[in-house]
Each structure stands twice: as structure tokens, then as C-alpha cells.
Amino acid sequence: MTNTPTDLTAPRESPDTSNTLLGRVFEAVLFDMDGTLVDSTDAVSRSWRRWADEAGLGESFRGAEHGVPARQMIATLVPADQVDQAVARVTALELADTSDITVLPGAAELLTSIPEHRRAIVTSCTRTLCLLRLTSSGFPIPATVVTIEDTDRGKPFPEPFLEAAKRLGVDPARCLVVEDAPAGLEAARAAGCATIGVEGTHAAADLVADLVVPSLDRLRIAVQDDGVSFELLPA
Image (cartoon, rainbow, N blue to C red; front, side, top):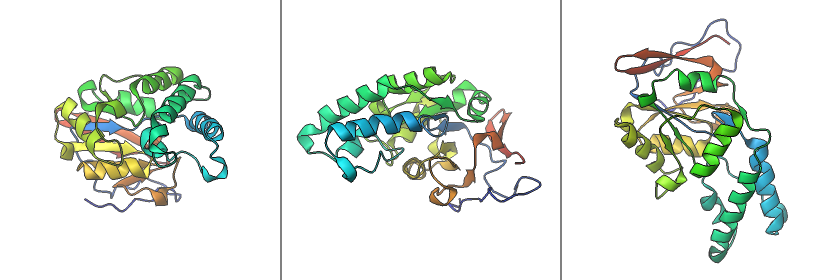
């Protein structure tokens, strides 16, 4: 398995079919949510900026680290005895702000083309927030959803993807993870999964994955008896 991203940003007449991930059969596909399936960037930024202002962090706060659980980020910003209160406040702000949350191009079509028993969402947010964002954007909710409440450690640790593979009854080495954040891709690699990075919240150069695409509408699923494989569509 190679961890060198495939650059799809340069103009080309036909898709690059040389990547070894393309055509490989996977038993399950595990999707990140924020930045991968739905665009919640503005809502997240507003909520965290408001909390940072309330907490008096000022210019020391450079924004939320995308793809990392809120508690892990907050623990680096406030004293230990303030973490629980801060997490509760950020969560309340995020639950109250669902404006501008939209489905990303090709995301719903790609996920719904995968059989139910071969797909999952794996997110660093809480279940309540996850379901609220999916519902607010009109995104179809799969049966298997793993949130930060389901594991002891979140991304960039492998536990969330290992838990999703376990729930689907598949070997993590036979899973493909679709992610937009370095922390999520790191977690996927640690779990032994193959990876597709999606540009958007991060540039292609920042995404260490087996394949990097500019958006999910460049991908198409081929369903087989023993799993699914990916095809790359022309730009």
C-alpha cells in the first residue's frame, strides 16, 4: 500500500486509472462526516469563535482543529478543571447553529450506492450533533454511525474506525476510509484501512492517502457480491 497522494488537480482528458486502489474490492467503506459528506465549516467556525471569545482566548485561539474531537482540542486550551464546562458550552453552541450546513457534491449519491451492511459514518462529534447536522442538511442517515461517545479515544487514534469495522463485521484491512482531515487519515492508517482523501478543508498536499480526489463526485461505486470497488470519473 502506498501513502503517496495521487494528484488529480492537473487537467487531463481521462481519469488516472493507474492507482492501485482503483478496482480493488473492499468489504466496507467508512466515511467521515464534517468536510467529507457535509459542509459545516461556517457553523463550526462561528461556534468555536464565539466560545473562544467568551473564554477570553483572544488571538491565542487560531481556530478548531478539523477532524479532532472537541474535548481533545479544548484540553490543550483551558485548565483541566474547566474542560467539562467548556465542552458543554461548545456543544450547546454547535447544536444551536445549523445554518449553512449543506451536502457536499457527490456525497449522498456515493454513500447511498453502497449496500447498507457495507457502509458507516465515523465522526468526531457527538451522536446528537451528528444526527442534527445530517438531518439539517437532508443527508441520508446510514444504520451504522460511530461517534466520539462510542470509543475511549477519538481520531487521530484508530479506535473509531476499528469500532465501525467491528459493528459491520469486517476486517479493518478490508475497509476503505474516506476522509478530509489529516487526523482522520492518520487514524485510518493506524487502523490498517486503505484511504481516500478529499480536498476542501485541507489542500491535497496535506492529505496523506492512497488516493486524493478534489470531490466525491469524481468517484463511482461498483457493487459486487464480495464488496465494492471504486472507479474514477473524468473531471
